[in-house]
Length: 220
Image 1 (cartoon, rainbow, N blue to C red):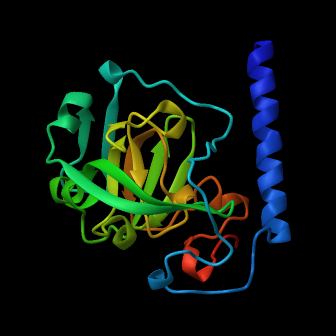
Image 2: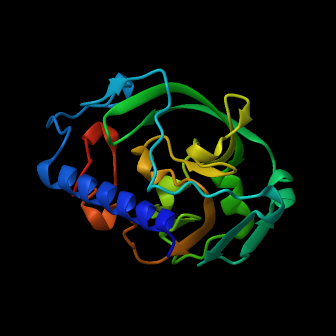
Image 3: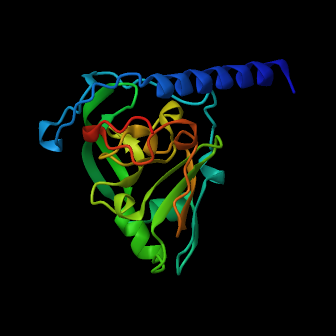
């Protein structure tokens, strides 16, 4: 292991321990609830910038080697290249970001491929009930299939009219607007449909399994 790799590993572990401590302490919890009609969930503050949060690794994914696998409990598994992904029907949506670290950003303009279109292509089997998103940095996160199939969920390649930069999960990231943003996996490389729920990276480390911002489901 190189010195740089060792330092990255130390930084990653320090971040993980810090977030675990937040979960144990209930950092940012207010005990409040709200409805989406109120727009800003409990305990959140509005920001204009887009803070960068990751596990200390920002993988570069060249478009010529990009692949997106969708498999598990599906009738028609796919493994799309960048050209395959770009050939899918275009989908655009405007939504808010709500981060578990207590910031929100309004009116983000996304372009990409809708989750509903993706599901229409792969055709989930009747027993499929959950989704696990896998990322190039080793990150995973889980959500119910019904949440992934919502009308505003997409696999985004563009933000504000430009390709999503690497630090924010480009070339493709998942966007699930109705849940805290850790559920919107960066650098996605595989989407797996399962019968049983399987907690992801942060869910195994004290974060809430569902992550509804208006119910303030920050931690388990």
